Image (cartoon, rainbow, N blue to C red):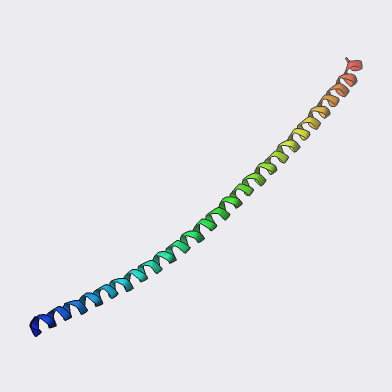
Amino acid sequence: MSPLQFTLFFVALLLGYVLVHVRMVRFEEHLQKLAGIQSLDERLQAIEQRIQALTESADRDGLARVTRQLDQLHEDLGTAFYLTAAFRDLMSAALLPIL
């Protein structure tokens, strides 16, 4: 093996070594970015779960509020029906002697 061949082989070997290490560094940076993306994804999923829980509780509270209002309306209508029936009976009893 001539000195020129040895030098070229050694330079190619060093160049390959440097390229492998540069690639490894880039790959480590890529993995760190992926880890950051994964942690962001986990945080977003946690936020989404909290929003869903808040939405479900708001829906349940809203439904309970509407139910209470319907019950109150039912009671008010029952009272109005009772009062109009009593007024009708009172008026018919008052108008019967006049006619």
